[in-house]
Image (cartoon, rainbow, N blue to C red; front, side):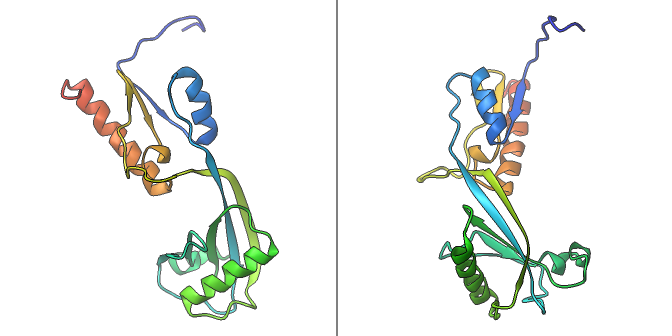
Amino acid sequence: MGSSDAVRYDAVIIGAGAAGLACAAGLLPGLRVPEGRTVTTLYHAPAEPPTTEPLLFVDSRRRFLNTCVPSAVQPGFSPDGRALVSTSVLGSPGPAETAAVLRAVGEVYGAETSHWELVHRVTVPGALPAMDGPVPLSRTTRFAPGRYVWGDHRATGSLQGALASGACAAREVLEDLAGHGP
C-alpha cells in the first residue's frame, strides 16, 4: 500500500493522552482538549512499613491524591528490602509542600514520617485532565458517525477513568457496527 492510498474504515477509535489528544483535535474539529494537570509521585522509604495491607488511601481533605505501599503488594518493588511508600499529589510541590504532604500521609497511616527518606520523585506534566465540576462521571465516546474518542478525559481523570472509557468505546463501536447504535 502506497502513502497516497486511501483506506476506508467503518469505525476509527482514538485513544490518547494529553499530547495525542491535542494532535487528534486537529483531525476532529470541535474536539475539546481539556487543560492538563501536573501530578508528582513521591517515593519514600520508611524504616518500618506503615501498613502491610495492599490498600490505596485517598485523602478526603485533598492534601494529596492517594498513597499506598507498593512493597506490601510486591516486595520486589523495593529492591533494597525496605518498605516503599508511594504518594501522588497535584502539581510539583516544593520542599515545604512536600513536608506538609508527608505529615498528612503520616496522619493517614498513623505513623511518624519525619525520618522517612525520599528515594525518588517523578513529576508528569499534564498527567490528568482538569475535571472542573460539575462533570459527568462518564460521557459517550461517540464523536461523529464512525468516529470515537476515549480516554480519562471522557470519564474520570484517572487510570480507572481511562479503562472505563475504553470499555465504553468498545461497547459503542460494537453496538453501532451491529446497527443498534444511534
